[in-house]
Length: 113
Image 1 (spheres, rainbow, N blue to C red):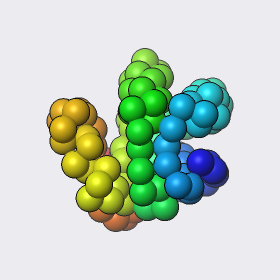
Image 2 (image 1 turned 180 degrees about the horizontal axis):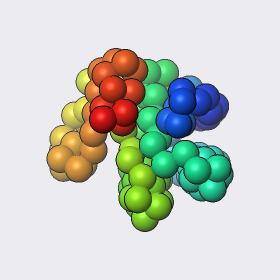
Image 3 (image 1 turned 90 degrees about the vertical axis):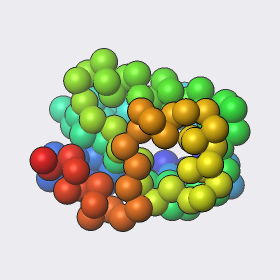
Image 4 (image 1 turned 45 degrees about the vertical axis):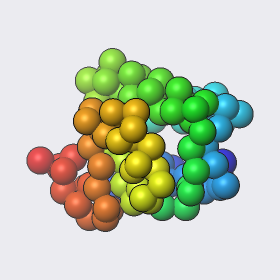
């Protein structure tokens, strides 16, 4: 998975791209999250529009990401999540603790409020 970061005012947007979110991506994502938090960006959007699959290691990484952002009193939002990933979040009950939006504008409006 490739991860790039862009900024929209005080919000960091992490764009993911690749075939799947898996164990080998964990350290890169967590490093990116920690660097984002260290730079003072506590509102983080993860764009999953170009990431079709997440395996169990990806779920572990996602939970670690949520913990890091919450520990910093931040806000983590998922956006552009495909049906396959939404179903995975539902089965694992993570959909109940994640903020998920279809569009970037909706996600940005959420973190601005």
